[in-house]
Image 1: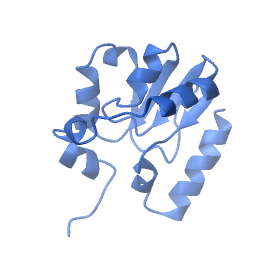
Image 2: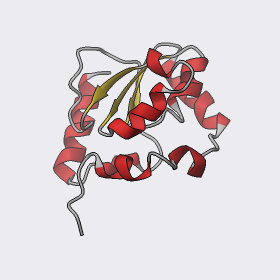
Image 3: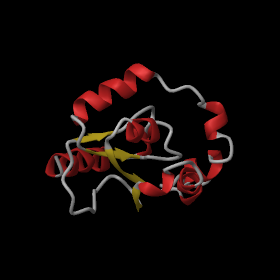
Length: 130
């Protein structure tokens, strides 16, 4: 088996991701909106914007981190997708100067961090940016 890297999942599924995962639970969007309190939110593993774009539409200022150029390219083709500032790379360490009202990760995205060290570093970094 090939080595799994930060880009592996996104590069393999980008072309079909939105088709496979069409549905977004509106209750989830409403809950994230409530937690963001209309402020600034950072999605870890933003991908194609499946969750970020509906949240942005409600008025939250969105930022994202992702390791896959292919997934982010899909996001950038969508209405208002280019309005979201994206940092490319691993979300194990948030390399941004901004502070956020909400930092979230959805679906199975957290499993992209393959070691406990990366996972702990992610939570520590997120805490530093809230």
